Length: 469
Image (tube, rainbow, N blue to C red; front, side):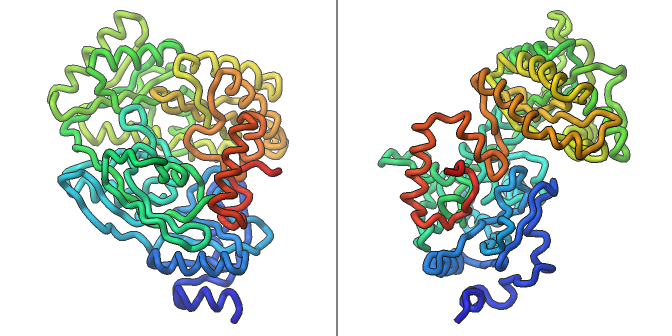
């Protein structure tokens, strides 16, 4: 029996896509930077089906690309053009298996959409703190596989901190049941950590135990104009001290980002009364302090006195707060109509954020004169989205031809400042060979040994994460 017929026996005729026309949405990423081909897309409904699929793929040495919501920004979920891989989409595995209210956990399947997981937590009187722009389509299995970040990392940590246990189908089809909800388990290697951030190169995550947190009763937002980038870090420190560390998000927003959103996205106006070069969006959350608005105003008053705040707006309603958050989330999409954008997802020590921005802007002006820096992101964890936008009047292809030189300039500076070339988006296809430049030989050797031990035939998402030999 042919390979695809054997696989169809497992998932049924509705669980396999063979025609290229049916596979379209699984073969490209939203940035249109990566496009591939596949033997088929498989849509299993259970861990047992995933195990059987992987067992056959191991027997036939068929490569597997695990795929969640396909919101990857580094090509990690896209097959290569060779067309000899199968995609395993977890979208039909989206059940909530267990609810533990007393322990504050949910056991969910990997295909659960993040927004649905957030809503389920809300319905139970809790919250799930992972907040990212793609939450309406991304899946928790992909979030775990890439160790997604988001706007609340400053308070709750990355996805890695939200996971207590995993269920994983290994490269030979074996199912590892690590679905524990224990908060403490000091019995050796923490095996789940191998798969969190592993980008599907070691196994297929099929389910997870995730933490829920008490839902804050009160939240208050403010958009604050600051004189320079150093002031953003100072505002962060001030807000944390005066609030008793109730800062749950703080986002850096440049003038150009507001201009692009108001230009290209309907129903958005500049929220600030005057035009300032830099703004930060600050969120406070609490279940104990009802008067967060008064607390926020105290922080703003102290900032005015210290000269690190120039102006501020404090929304009066949840709807107004939501509009400010929506503006922040529209920044990525608002760059598209302006032409080419060379994306960077980097992190540096918080104290070096201003130095990075100033030096990166100066260095790239010698590479691409008059480029437009769109720099925004998560001040509280040092994660910046540094996106050089093509100069006005320059052809897009001419600008994008500079991608490698621009990225090398940015990443060399990040490395010099003891930062990371990938803060929350992962490595995928885009950055795998850059790891040779920025990770030590011993680190790469350990990574390859782990890969060879768990996937000796190299069928799990090959060509991703690890550098080419």
